[in-house]
Image 1 (cartoon, rainbow, N blue to C red):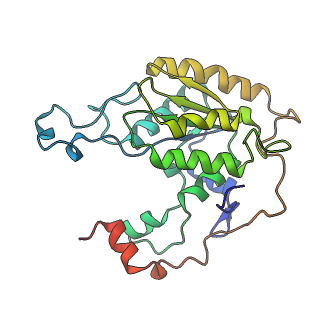
Image 2 (image 1 turned 60 degrees about the horizontal axis):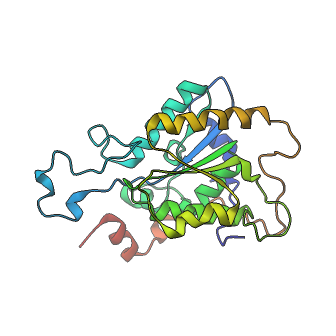
Amino acid sequence: MSDEPAVDRYDGTPVPELLDAGVPDAQRDFFCYLMGPYTIQDARYLYDDADELETPYASGPLVDPHRFDSFEDALSDIADELRERYDIRAFIATDVDVPTRRDVVEDDLDAPWMTPGEQSIAFARYSDLVCFVFSHAGLTTGTGGELGTVGDHFDLRTTTDGRPLKPRDRFRVYYSPTFASATIERFPADFGLDDFEYESRADFFDDVEPLVQHTINREGDDDFPLYRREPESYIRVDGSDRDPDDIPAEVVAELRGDD
């Protein structure tokens, strides 16, 4: 079990209500949570002459650097297409009105927050399908950590006794061909999750389509619940006791990029 608490509400509002309010409607009330990097690889951080390039941003099968200057926008575009193609409620974390501490500081919000790990657990818990998307074109350290957090929280490790808290078939890990991370690439085997290497955008959707249909077809199956049970140690926090004024000054300065 991960150290991240299991969150079932934010500021008093149950997470399913937050998802319902933030994720666009569709014919099927089927939530597909896309997790991936939000920051695109930017050559300007590595090369002094990167501004001479046609675009400093990395490209990949799901990322057109002429259309997107962030991987978050690319993921959001994929979610849009999933909704259009399959009439499901595909989303990324920023579609849901729950800020992180960074959001509170950068946008000067007077609001409680969730950590990225808490968000990942909360949104994954109530989603019908969870897809982790990795690419060499994005900075993936944070997403790799969230994959580990989610896998541990839901007891997905194959060495864990008993059944996981959420069926493994509700998760899928995607890689671009040139993506390389020994740590992240180990997770599917450790957690018993299926993975898929996509070489193009069409390739990605060709794999997602039968996965979505298979998941829909299994709805109502007693062996395929959203989550199986709540552990005895299930901790509930809703962030209501997190006062933005209590964030240490040095943390505020770091998040704002102050010198």
